[in-house]
Image (cartoon, rainbow, N blue to C red):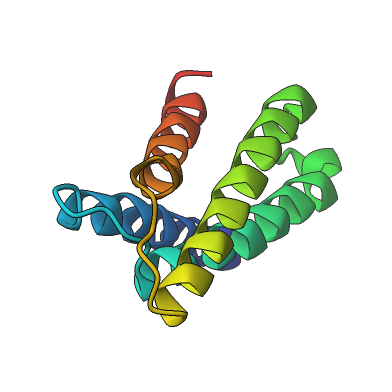
Length: 119
């Protein structure tokens, strides 16, 4: 279980890196890249699996889950995912992605990372 937990944490961090890194890489000409979209999905799937694993191992001395924190992070991630989906659709249509939309993907991801670290 320890290896699975570590592997999920690793993938979760890579998803966050794709979101924030893609945002910073295109900061001057904001858009939503493929890696940001993939990062949002990776964050969602690995986050849900991490919560499941923590809940399953709670009685065996596992860390347990702060449900309020997870709820807040999930709501923010859904916002990131929706913004990324809208942004990618606009890119595929050849339309320009709005600055606010592109910055929402990266900015909300950064807020989610801060909540993970400081809460």
